[in-house]
Image 1 (cartoon, helix red, strand yellow):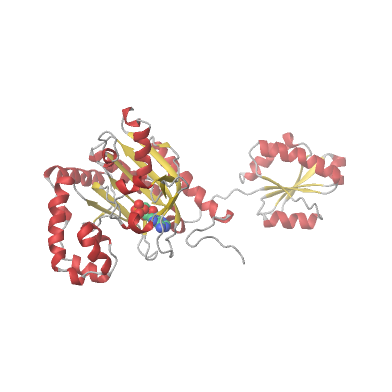
Image 2 (cartoon, rainbow, N blue to C red; image 1 turned 90 degrees about the vertical axis):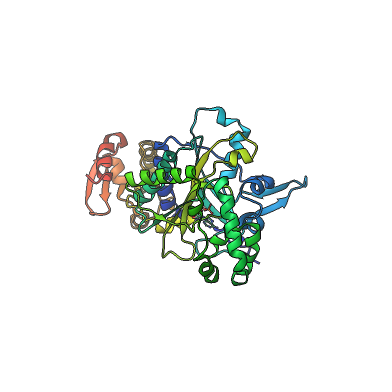
Length: 419
Ligand code: AMP
């Protein structure tokens, strides 16, 4: 029987990488302009980390993590998100003693055992950005502006930025009580999942996509009506900065996000029309998480871009490098070609040789197949006359160049630039 990939786990093939690298490089170039530093963390962490951070009564921890006991009987979990691991590392390495804000980003796979569907995988990739040490709304504005800029530069069209504030502990508790009271009367109208969530973690009810629950929630109390003075001030300051930065956003008092650790600002980027899984990025503030995990009180904010979902919405990048092809006829030409290949590649030129060394026609076919812009033809005559033929595959024009890579490099580079 053929062995296939595990359900929800997909292969990335070479053709997927033009857009993948374009996205990563563009995102990195902007992230670095804000002085975020790259880090890499293990994909496996102690299960307790996610129970204490993401929350024991969240869908992610209750149903979606890949958790197992290893041979020492330790409970381990494949990370479902990156923030908890970054906090763990900040605490473990005592990084919060460094000048703040601390800014990190990481790119890598996350794992959630959700039901696979279009845009939802069990292994998916995120670009994750986190900032520690600033409580000011300016940090929130800068981060949101950076995310918005990346999406604009990628030419992602028709996305919506949803924004809400979840307040702090002080405003959340009275709100939770009010919501619990409201949902109690509506218990029978809720779906089975939300009936369970209602008592354990009532905020999660806002995450439900079922129409029956959405209808119930239309009259529900909203967190924004429960914000304390400080949280209200923080939120209105942020909105002021976003206005200053000309960022269009939708105030969405129903937005809660699927993790427990958020405080104050939360946001999500949605692209309507790409299917049921339309959130391509999301993030928020988590001012208590570092302390909850045993570190010093350190306010923080971050976001994650879901690469698997965003990539299909990114237009194909225009600039595609095209190879230089060496068509070599005869053993002497092969030896000459090796010299050329070495020098061309040293000069940063992508150079191809067809190792089958067939007829000129078949080598030109191969060059066409590779979308080569230039072909250098070297045969017996060319070796004798110390001249080679440079063929432009687009214009079909051929010129003679000296059979000396150093001497011909300038003209080759000019032609590759389209001059
Ligand atoms: P979250 O932390 O759940 O808000 O995730 C941040 C982003 O990661 C989302 O907006 C999605 O784009 C992406 N994402 C989350 N879960 C999945 C999944 N199962 N498959 C693909 N992308 C995902």
